[in-house]
Image (cartoon, rainbow, N blue to C red):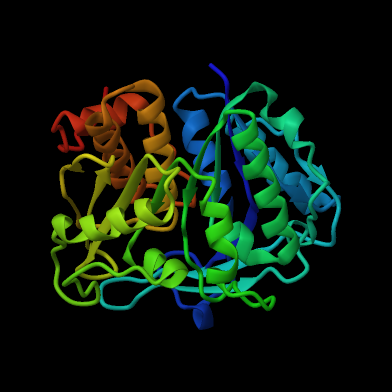
Length: 345
């Protein structure tokens, strides 16, 4: 099987232990992660060959991030070294009615100073069948956006499938360009689009009909078919649009599901009640990793691919850290209806 290539920034995550607030912390737990690296880890964990493309500083912290990827079985053949520093984000874990908080410290990161021409994309895609990027990368800097566009165009030229998770992050778009000035050219080259109602609204001014995600504990999947259709109309190359459906009862209890629109029908799947969330960061990334695995392994069965993605990301909510560390067997067990959590002996 050929490689799945992901492109983006891996960061150092610092979190107060337990559910402490920043003001209570005298120490921080260390995790390495980021949207695209999380997808790569999921896929490597499922036995899919991967290559993660990024730029890391030439210092001990950059070495630690590189070792984390290698430890998880992710290919690092095309990682660039250089730049000033590794980006950091601080995460305060929410609980019950108190939401989580994120503070970014990623200015002048190695990845933010990447430029087009630094990566030999023709070489990267020589042994690749799939390329994945997220809306986080073009939000980092003009250079990162241009490098991402360069990658997408080469992938299109070489017949490599391209997917994106739109991943709108309002605190990142601060280098002078708005999302609607950058994202359309990038998404134009995508075959598979993953997002939610906020992503579609903020990037492309596309709105679901009759849904307010800040109130209520249920989400009507059929309300999102308009988003899927509008995205396909705007981006004709796209073959599948997937929307993740998160109902937030509290920071500790979410409902979780998704829909997939393939241009002909809207597919729905189980809605899971995640009642004791361990860590919801990386939920969308684990969904994307599961979806790519499903589309590669359950060919011509979009329903099974969607079922796998939702079950995989449901399980991610039980894993501390950014990345999903579950196995294919564990995901398929949940897909089969076994949510008992019994001890495996």
